[in-house]
Image (cartoon, rainbow, N blue to C red):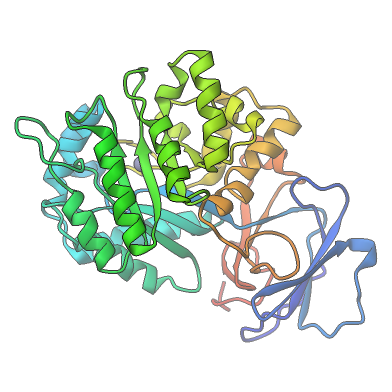
Length: 420
Ligand SMILES: [Zn+2]
C-alpha cells in the first residue's frame, strides 16, 4: 500500500483514489488544519502541493463521518441491571424499569457508560451524535452532568449535542405514570443545554399533548433553543399531535429547528390526512427521525419522496427499552433498508444519506460533507460503494475527526494514537 505516515499530529494530508457516496469515479480529498481544502476528480489531483502524507484508498469508500441523530447515552448499557429488562414489552414497563434504575445512577456511572457508548459509535464511524438525556425527579440533573463529562473527555474525537428529555412526561398527573419532568427540562435549559426535548404521546399520558407542545415552544423561544420531540410513538391514529407541532413551528418561525422522532401514528391516519400533514411538515421544514430498531415505523418512503428531510438513528443501546445495540449506523441503515424495501442501489444511496447529509441537516451542522470548507470528519470503509457497505456490513477501517485519525484498525492518517 502506498502509504506515508508522519510522526506527530499534523492534519495536512490527502486521500487519493477514493470512492465517494453517490458519486461516479475516483476522487481525491485534500485536508489541512482540520478542514477539507479540496475535493477533486482523482485525475485532477495536484501532486505538486506540499503535504505531509498521501494515502491511497485503492477504490475504497470514504464517507463523511456518520451523524447519529438519536441515541440515549444516559441509560445505555444498563439492560443487565434489572429483571424488568427481560419483561419490558411495552413503553409503560420500560419507563417504570428505567425509573428504578436511574434513581441509583451517579454522575460517574452515567459518564462511564456514556463514554463507552460514544466510543462504540466512534469505532463505527460516528463523529457527531445527538443524545437524549433524562431530567426528572428520579435522576435530577445527574445524567446531564455525566454526559457532559463524557463529552469533555472525548472532545476532539466526537461532537455531542444534548437534549433535555422529559422521559417521565411533561406534566404531573395524579393516578398516572406521568410525572412532571417539565420543570426539570426548564432547569436544564437554564443550566445551559440548548435543545428542548419533549415526550408527546396522547395515548401514553393523560394530560393535554397540545399544552405540552405549547410549553416547550415557549421555553425554546425564551432561550433561543431548538426542539427535539419523541412524538406520536404509538401504533394508532389516536396519538396524532404532529399537525399541531407543524402549525406551532410555522407560527413561531422555527422552521428547520424542530425535529420529531417516531411519528408512528402517521402510518395509521388516512392517506388524505397523511398527505395534508406531510405538506404541512414541508412548509414547517420539520426534521423527521426514524428509528428502525424499534420496528414501529412511519411512512418513511412517502416522507422522503415528498422532500421531507428524513434521518435515521440508532436509538437505545442495551437498556430496558431495547436489549441489543452497539451504536453501529450500518446496522440501523440495513434494518431501515430492509423494512422499507430499499435494497436496490438508488434506494441504498438514499438510505446512506439518512445518517450523513440528512442527519447533519437535522442537527444544523454547517460544516458537514465532502466539499472544501467542511470539517475533515471521515470514515473509511472496506467497500467499493455505499450500497455495498450497507449490504455487506463493511468493516470501518479508519475514522477521522478534524483531519486526525481517532479510531480504526488501518492507519491512514496522522493519528491521535501513534501506537495504533
Ligand atoms: Zn428515543
